[in-house]
Length: 154
Image (tube, rainbow, N blue to C red; front, side, top):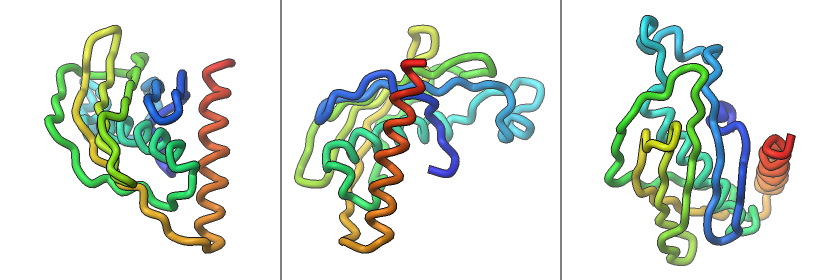
């Protein structure tokens, strides 16, 4: 994840749910162009935060064997509030249904206890085989998940 949209994993219940956080610091590059006089996290990046947390949950479900977590669909996405610098988006994702490697997840992002974004995500865990790239990807994502968990305990 080159442009990480989550800062920490608060809780990860394998096969069930994940809770994560993203704090908008004000130093993000995109804030310079996205409503300069009224800086807010773009809706597409709020959705990306949900996807990134969901993909970490899915990777955990398949023991990090999938090389690619494909975003198949976002359904019933609703944006209800802005997230501005200094505010934190608390992300909650839970698995609603699993059909082999296709997952349907319920995802919400809340700010100060109020929903800012919500929707259902459909993700597919795609196995890319036993290549060195697949092994590197699996190891990298395991390490990233560990780092994000550690960030919550600091």
